[in-house]
Amino acid sequence: MFFESDKKYKQFPTIGCCGIDCGLCPRFYTEGASRCPGCGGKNFETKHPPCGIKSCCADKHGLEVCPQCTEYPCQKYADKEKIERDSFVTHKRIFQNHEYIQTNGIDVFISGQNKRIRILQDMLSNYDDGRRKSFFCLAAALLPVEHLIEAIENASSEIDIKSRAKALKAALQKRADVETIDLSLRK
Image 1 (cartoon, one colour):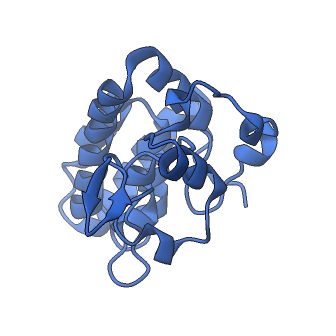
Image 2: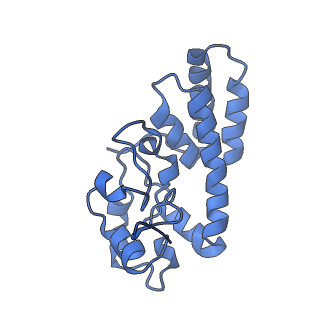
Image 3: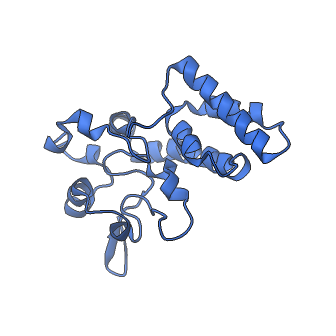
């Protein structure tokens, strides 16, 4: 953890204490007042209602993610169905992220997540026609990295942004269908 003006912030706000991929969330890439700084990032508390998981993990125990805690999995994770809900960001990888972090460590996880973030940033900069940010964020969180790269390569030959956006969405959806990955959020 690092300190700025006596306020604690997580070192890695792109991963939520709970395992959400904050760095792959549409609100992380929103401009203006509704932009989210990621879990435990600067001004996090002004953007979100109080989070019991973050309060316990980061504030109380000084950890980045729950699987670093000797008490994980605790009672907060007892209702798996409630934890794996969706809204504007997918919760489908929470437990996979936790398992990966437990096995490989937070630094290795962040390195892999940073690859996904760079790919997503490329999609948002070069393929988003203003209508596909949430879809691209979801695909970046759920599809294997090699499939994301392949989909971008397949869509890169299109000249205008609308054609590239349409081609990339189709290529991502095709890969998701083959992998039986649902690229939609549960509301």
